Image 1 (cartoon, rainbow, N blue to C red):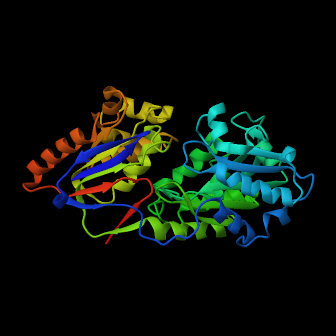
Image 2 (image 1 turned 120 degrees about the vertical axis):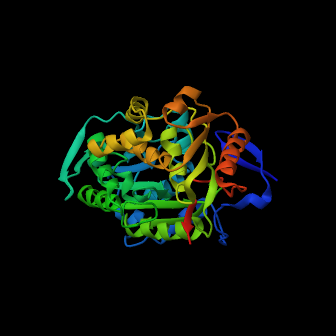
Image 3 (image 1 turned 90 degrees about the vertical axis):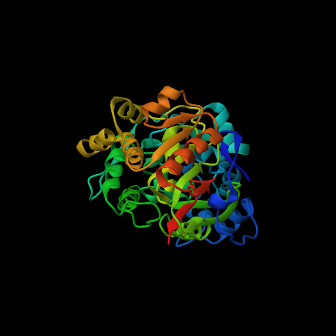
Length: 417
């Protein structure tokens, strides 16, 4: 039978005996009604634990709206007009709104990318895009994380964030306070917060991850007045929206995400074929790691993961690349993290931990040498990688391998039963 997964802006097809497939893991069958901006409009009318946004602002106030960069699938161009309508209703003019791109440790956006992000508001709003004039220090969290926020964001009278909620491999879920930290924070703050990923409770699907709680403590120190968090389906349509308090609304969106993407699975796989679903989620290996992390749950020890993603922009982070290239084995990368926590290196170690228990075959547009430097076996096509994995597993097991296909691996979380 023929199957397909996304890679960059294209699809890769491959053949597999249907009898050997455990399942093709998609979002759960959940009945949804209206989709798109209308859901945002309705949620703005009924915020959680806050007044309406129009009631939180007034004429002459400076409002900062924080939104995601292009490595996230957030449809800002659909959400922003609804939020701007609400701000206009509260007396705020376009001239008093700053759109801050939550870059975290990512690169600034190009003009074409800003046009895509902002939609009809491109050219109408001032934009903060990696060009801040400084920082404001708010102190430290109980964990010791420094709370340093871009000055333009910190000095706004009202802060609003837009985000989409997905599973996150150590913060539990995305969305909410992550707009402030790491979104508009510093490398040092992000590194201090992310060091908490070593806690066993810092895992995908845990709403009370210690990483998340530290982010929320920092966010309270800064102040985030209102959030608009959406859940997207596999076609990247808005199928749910929660607005209001940055904790209450985010948790509400998390529960909806669980209903949609928490996928029960009764059988572990010998081979997992996993993709991020294509661009923009597979721009680099740093982002593609999220799909790999979800694939680690259902694969048997000694099994194989066929990881599919374009990685058109390479590895995506200099420390990540350096740690991989300097190590002689996955174990050495993991040991490096135990000796020294470094942002970027943390993802190298997360990948290496998976590579210690499963073979990773990478189907990408990366040079072969770059893939091998990351302890992955390079392939150009899914069928070639899958055939290699099946042959090796067949020889190891003495039977036909069982295969799980995850076309949207960064979104769907296998819940082993």
